[in-house]
Amino acid sequence: MAATLHPTGHAGGKPASLWRVAELTHSSIVIAADAAEIMDIIADVETYPEWIPGLDDAVAYDVDSAGRPAEATFTGNLGMVKDSYSVGYSWADVEVSWHLTKGDMLHDLQGRYTCNDLGDGTTEVEYALNVDLAIPIVGMLRRRGERVIIDSALKGLKRRAEG
Image (cartoon, rainbow, N blue to C red; front, side, top):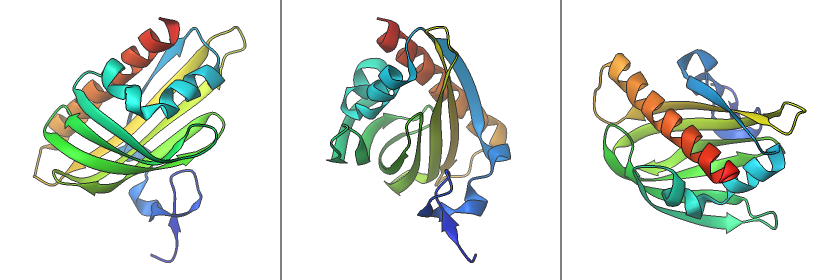
């Protein structure tokens, strides 16, 4: 592969061939908050265990002046296995993407939150995810696990933002 790109097209991340939209499981939810508020909640990764079921611990590293981490380490149940793993982030105004930098049970992990301001005080938040375990698992079961993770996180994010 000649070049490596972050999922958002920035140089330096996973090979672009690993970030194919067709491989992502995704869902969305409408939240009664503006995109900036939602992105602030998403950036506060150390609070994730308070609103994402199954996540036991989260630690942010290299946090910038806007409160957005460059990396984070999580421990918890991924819907299929329990693991401790680290991700690297790429931040934009209304989108954040991440990729696995270290994991025991994970071979690869890529995800993205995208906020779309609907112009009426609400925001549609899309969460896209691809999980590749280090152990063999049937694709259908992997997708089901991804959907559980996505749905739990989106519902938790909605409760947190509208709370």
